[in-house]
Image (cartoon, rainbow, N blue to C red; front, side):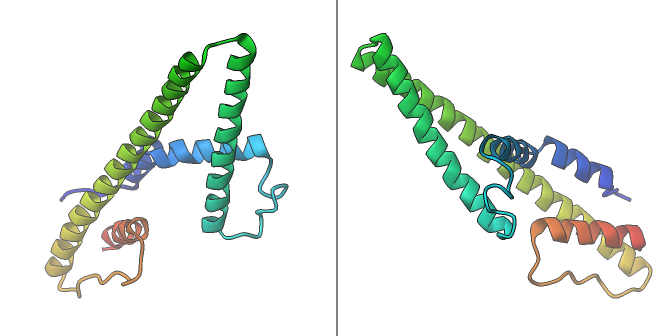
Length: 155
């Protein structure tokens, strides 16, 4: 029987960019203040993430402006400032591309885990002459995987 242990789920979460972005979000909140001090405590989780994303854009613009001021003060010529700005842009793009790739990989692993657990659960239900498990229609991938793990453990 193929196992769908909770340990694998924890490993996925630990390796996933969810952790990276979660850690990023935590450091971001620390930089700008707590959710309470930002007036975000009563705001829905989705809305908070949107506000943090907007704050990130504002912060990036401030950093770029600050770099431009430093380079101008130092006397770096315009063409070199453009080159340096391009390096900054490339670093940010590479980081975001890497995060997207990691999130896509996480999604693929979750979908694969769901498929494996669904097959295992169907085999168990057939062997025990039980009705097949029907997950909720409107559920997330994470919730479906959790529900399937729970059903496999209970069956």
